[in-house]
Length: 346
Figure 1 (tube, rainbow, N blue to C red):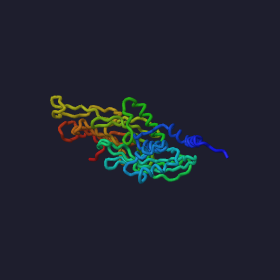
Figure 2: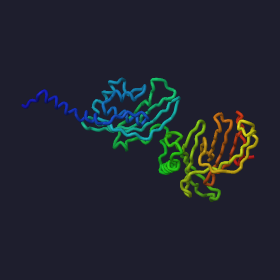
Figure 3: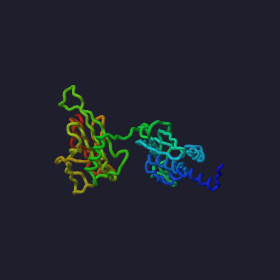
Figure 4: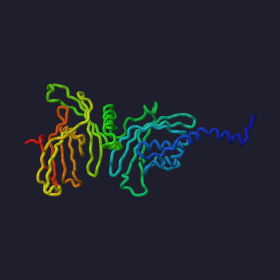
């Protein structure tokens, strides 16, 4: 019978462990807490590298096991974990933002067997400006994964939580690219998430259409451009079947404002419209889907006692200015004057 020396046995034992150790050493270190999906990917990076204390630290007050020892033991036969994340949805509540992350993972054991799991993680981000040391980054609150079949892309849930994922259709992408090209260097393209871009579907009938005509379809896209101390500006694009996709220009009154002693802090002497201009951006604007109107409210200073408000209604496939109010007196009071009003009945 052939015998094996203690030294040779030790070498054999080390060679058996080599594939796992080599993978852990070669896998790049990832510790990214900049968004909720990145936290999930960092979690499984830590698991794959056998850095279980780091993996444990990605969870908040609610931990995935009764203690750290049990958590680490749960991965003792796992060689690596491949992970794929989907579109994250979010909702705010009591000073926090909660994120719902679709997740699919492939757990590969040391003997080469593989298992796929899929489900959702919930992460929480506490308002950073309201925190005191020690600072808490985005932390995972809970996760629920169940056995799944197929590859990761097929197993990945399309949505988690009640909030639908952002729109990613081809027309929206086209409008986004057009805005980026038109306003490169002029607008802040770094803003993401809620308020950065919005899309609206418009169904309408032209006055010239037959009574039984099928409604026309249009799409309106709003993009954030810039923000000051108390105003933010937006750029709009409109698509319809007849004209395609185009940036919107809005009719806006050009005003002649005269103050006593030419001092805006003095008494307002006269306010009149001397013409109209086409504006490419609206200030503090929003679209009301029920009334099919765009509204803007531009503050002339922070207290809001001087301002201008416009209303543009969508009809016959285009936006028409129907109301414009101006408060040109810097008197500490809100007392606008209608410069034109085609939107209010007698």
